[in-house]
Length: 201
Ligand SMILES: Cc1cc2nc3c(=O)[nH]c(=O)nc-3n(C[C@H](O)[C@H](O)[C@H](O)COP(=O)(O)O)c2cc1C
Image (cartoon, rainbow, N blue to C red; front, side):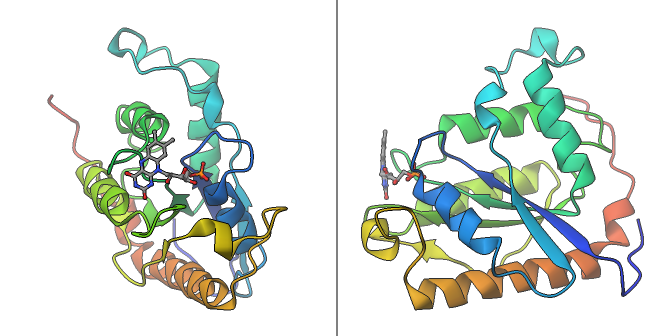
């Protein structure tokens, strides 16, 4: 996969919350309007179709997993917005990553450029969840963008009642992350073709 300068990039936004009215999904939806020229961001809204991981079925993936893998294969990069649950990554997100980590290296997250952001109603901005999520993604051989970061705290003051992002500073930071992810994806595209070693565990 080599990018010509004129080739447009597609980013898949994955919210780590199934909640109706999720601030993390709202954050990604705001990002759809903040992409640089030549880049589109679309939000994946079917994570609830991914069943609990069972290694007995890893070679015959359920439909919800296949749908997610297909969406990831078609995307050039991922932008994951995670809540923080009990100072860690939500189970639905970890569960999905466990499925993806065991798929064919060409349709999982190995070699895929990924940025992590997150929103919480609390005061610490999902720092612990994001740190742990980056660690998980690195262990899966994703190409994780380390900077810039976006830790959205006190989410109820950053979004309006309808879930619209109304805080200008957060918008600006989100725009920076999306732009950096697009740049990172173009930079990393040659190494995205690295041969991923077969897992032995
Ligand atoms: C089970 C549970 C545990 C939580 N633990 C934390 C936490 O450790 N740190 C934090 O900042 N927020 C915590 N929260 C608050 C969530 O970050 C907040 O509800 C957030 O809005 C969830 O994301 P969403 O709006 O995308 O659904 C917790 C919420 C739940 C339901």
